[in-house]
Image (cartoon, rainbow, N blue to C red; front, side, top):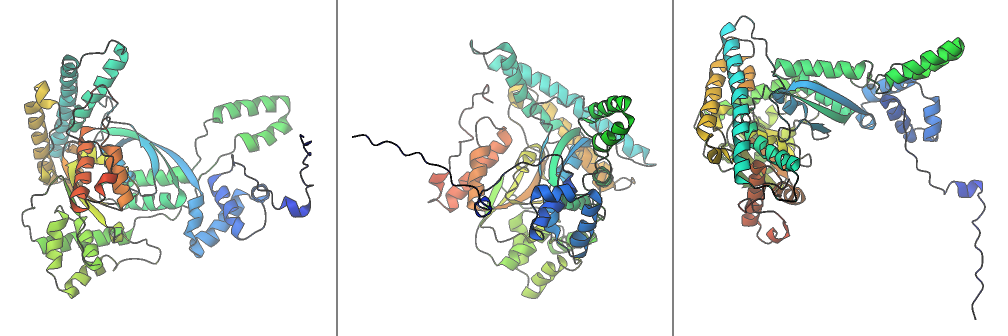
Length: 527
């Protein structure tokens, strides 16, 4: 016998049950600092988000932030204010410095998929040093000329080598091979090349970023810090601004009084983070400490030759935390491999080693975050020597600690795949050698900040060194993601060598990696 279903009624909503009903809603239209204040009020008020936002004005938000953010040092409040920026026509060199934040989200023009020949380039101020200006201009123009020549030649060579499948459209075929040709040609793009990027960061990261940029030895980077601070403090660009202004005009034409009310809502200026970045300034701790660490590294290594080092060197043998910290502090201040520096640090007395660690702390102010070099204790440390272009792809990995060395021609340059097959390897090598020679001449010039300015002429094929510290999960992630066949051959090789290094040192963990052999044949039409 079938039972008759019994209708179930929801219980009546009472003041007691209402409190058990979770409410979730997205928030749109609040200024970043106002929204940060509203969220911070959860810890100081029983008001709901809607109630808080209705009663908060930008002036009240500013008063709150002045009290709790600056006076009491509650910096986590700034994590709640997120701001989007477009940063256009900056050099690749400046872009690398800009994005060097662990808490950073953004996208940049891709040197793998776009033609940068028309991007133009950054021209530093050489003052009265006309000779250096001429060397700089001639070097940059030659790099762009050969960039175009290599691209065209490699593109034609690829079309000769790779047959178009019948089912593939001609447009898709050429687009794919064109991207492969840019993979090769980009090795000749100088760090002076202009690019554009967008970033979305919280206000705490923004404040740190501005301070770091203002502390740079490179004039363009310092100017970028000033412009970023001005953009956060001034009126933001509203994508609907023109439409809102036109609507307000129409309303005012019908009813002037209503038009005034509409203007307060539709055409008001929004300043995204004027309070949270107003005190951002150059960081004396960062500048003075790095200057002293460069001097300490020079004294410890005494100009000895740089040891030969592999593409990827996994340093995971046990060492005292004090040794790792001292070694890492010096690593970012010179051009030597990690193991070579550690050998010298390990030979020091405990007092001498502790003196290096103290250098990293000596000038730290009350509100200064520790230098990144103090992020130590990771089980896996990869000392990587690769081309700048490939490094930039690796630079996007934020779950690891990265310590970068300054760009220099001292490590030579990489030879990209496809050059020999296209018959342009001699042209490429000669072009890079000329650029590296120009670096030396510019670094010795009389122009202001000559050594810093010289970096702009280095092409992306130049090798540079960076230390990547991470845990097992991140090593597995990078190895799997970056070794995939559709990736660039430069970082594919690095990712594969990272896996191989872990395989040698931790063989029982190797089977869990799904890395792709960088030596396996690749379908050039797969992207």
